[in-house]
Image 1 (spheres, rainbow, N blue to C red):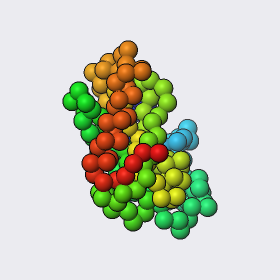
Image 2 (image 1 turned 30 degrees about the vertical axis):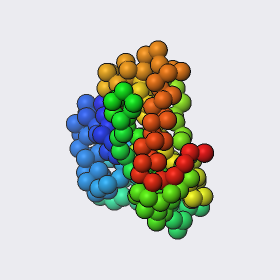
Image 3 (image 1 turned 90 degrees about the vertical axis):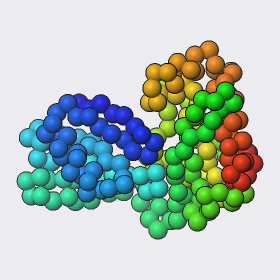
Image 4 (image 1 turned 60 degrees about the horizontal axis):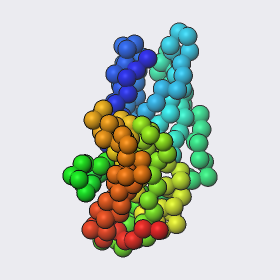
Length: 198
């Protein structure tokens, strides 16, 4: 129904169904700075279940009734996190040893400085080839951040969503440059004064 592309901290949808796309666009404008996902909708397309979240805020579900022009909360995925000071998630790139730009996400504890914090660092790569992390809420990274850790999620070469050339760069590099991409991420964070890997 839609072609999904990403640009770091933002997902972009190219909807094949323009009516559904118009609904998504309005919601994305209303929830600026957050990710909006249309989970489901009624046959007559007057009611929509919507997921709204960000890297720093857990998902909340809403019911959009376009006839009544109302948007009602249905519930939070993690209600126990209300009021908890969550970490801040950012997107950046760093250079691998061979010069390839490696995309990554970094989650820092609430209130931590962006550089020079000298925090313990956990490297948490995603699993699988042609897979990837994204800018959405990651409960595992947030759990570690609330315990005082900086969490680095490198999108090593071969990860999906960054173009064919980037995926192809991971061919036959499972125990080679894919691994050194992770180490290069650690070096990049050390240069920023974040700390040492655990």
